[in-house]
Amino acid sequence: MALKLITPAHVAGTVEITVPGSEQLGSLKIRFAYQAAKAHDAWRDAAIADASSGKRTMTQILAPVVIGWDGLEDEAGAPVVYSVEALDDLLDRYPASAGELFRGYTRVLTESRVKN
Image: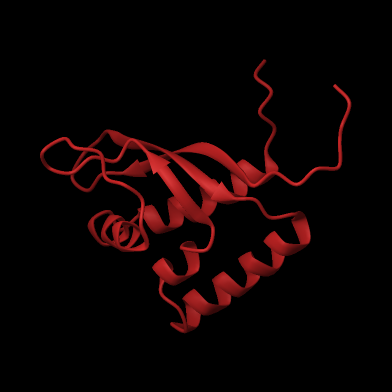
């Protein structure tokens, strides 16, 4: 496959979410804003510093890069449409999800999709 210097609008991947009190993981298909390597490195470094210092919340850190999802339902089984408020609710109800989304974003940007 020939490579082309293009900038995709977004990248997507499945992120496994820890469900408190359950041995099973939840799974969300997440759409992330694309960042080239230098931009991602700067975002990652600022995110780590801001989270450590309390300068920004994880919602504030993740909202610019999480741009959509599939697979999240409310208690009645209806799809939850992505919004910053819904992201904040997800991070509140599933405490491990912030780190899982953070790591999932880096994985989607840096790991190969080739399956052997």
